[in-house]
Every structure is written in structure tokens, then in C-alpha cells.
Image 1 (cartoon, rainbow, N blue to C red):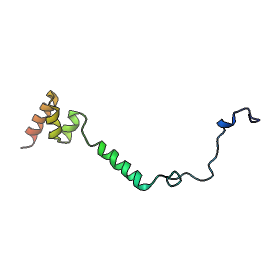
Image 2: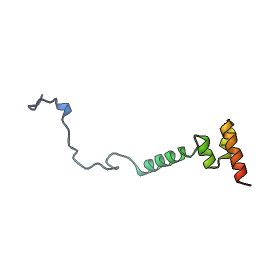
Image 3: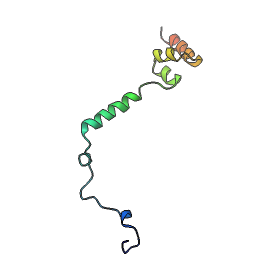
Image 4: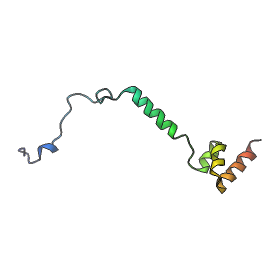
Amino acid sequence: MPANGFPSHLLMVRPTRALSWTSMSVRPRAVAALAVVLALSGCKPRTTEDAEAKHDVAWLAEESSPRAVASLGRLADSEP
């Protein structure tokens, strides 16, 4: 143990250089791909209210719950 009484593995090591994307070996292309995947994964509605707000008739028809059918009716009444 060091003189201060703490085990050496608990001592903080200062980095010799500033952290950046390149120092962490993260490529910009990988970051962009991750951003696209995250953006596309949030596009599907999760509730009937989301689907109605996005006018996602296909999702509502597939859901076929009473709320989804009511949402389909409201969409049909609002758009001739």
C-alpha cells in the first residue's frame, strides 16, 4: 500500500492527452451509422395515439384493437 493508506488500484491516473473521438478509436462513419439507426428505430408508433398523430393507417389497421379502430374512424372523418 502507498503511504497515504489507499490501495494503488484506487488511485486515479491522469491521462497523458486530452480525450477525443480519435483517441478513443471511434470513427466518424460509425458514429453517423449509429445516429441513423437510432433515428430510424424511433419512427414506428408505439401507441394508437402516436399512430393517429402520424396518420399511420397501416399500423392502426394491423393493431386492430378497439382504440385503433376508433382512431381509423377519426382519421377517415377528418380526411375526405
